[in-house]
Image 1 (tube, rainbow, N blue to C red):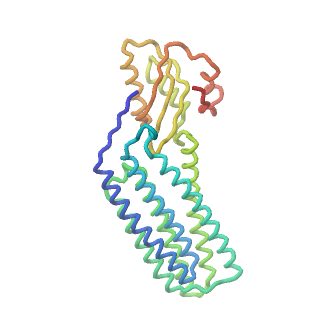
Image 2: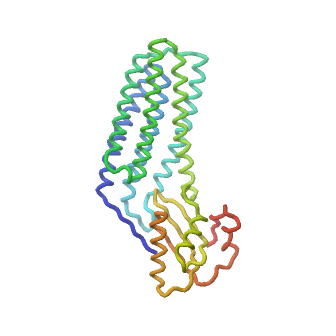
Image 3: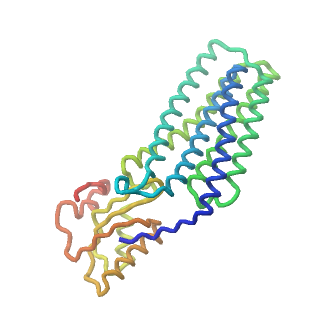
Amino acid sequence: MAHSHSHSHLPADANARRLLLAFSVTALFMLVEVVGGLISGSLALLADAGHMLTDAAALFFALLAVHFAHRPSGPRRTFGWLRLTTLAAFINAIALVLITFFIVWEAIQRFYHPQPVAGMTMMVIAVMGLLANILAFWLLHRGNEERNLNVRAAALHVLGDLLGSVGAIVAALIIMFTGWTPADPILSILVSVLVLRSAWALLRESVNELLEGAPVSMDINALKRHLRRAITEVRDVHHVHVWLVGEKTLMTLHVQVIPPHDHDGLLRQIEHFLVDHYQIEHVTIQMEYQPCSGPDCHLSETQPDHNHSHHH
């Protein structure tokens, strides 16, 4: 069992600093938008504040992930606290879905009973929100964001949020120049759809991770075939389990091999294969010389959907 973990602490700290700044900017303006939405009577601002909440939360989880990745694991929590970010993402996603439903419900009410909206106040706050988003996006896009999935996800969130602020500005302009207040609930529904989209993606990913699902991008049957083809000594691959903890992919598998001259060499070869082709650094390999016998062995060949039958 080999672990090749390379952690350079400098980028992580730089990431953490940028994330913290972006989080502070976003969280502050979320509050400004909530207050502004209540004062001006604008639902689009409240919807955009909901959108900013998704950003603030995404940035917060990214910060948590950076923080907990460096926390040592102990005998009780052998993976450390990495799953906590997934749990937080799950709770956040559910909260977002509820917020979205509330805003859409309120918007529908407003079509029947239009409310006065202070266009100018709405405009000023929407523009400030847009500037805050641009600042947060710029903070996240400086430096090595391509290395950190969390930072990239957070940057995408903020980009989606720019659209929300633009929506609020458009609604404010329409109300200022024409006095047509339904523009506000209409745009709040459009922004809500954006929020719902990110919330749904977040919910799907976090549920998959909490249910110990394999990473969505990974085809396990293809991995088995690939491993058999790539390494001549490998006869069969079975009992494959892949799951995620935080952003770390973990894997256990049984490999039936031709008895090698160099047992450790072959083990390392399989490990390198999994790191190089599938970025799996944390793997437990059980090597066997006898063909696998038992109901589980060839289950995956006949029923491709049952990779996760847990018989250990």
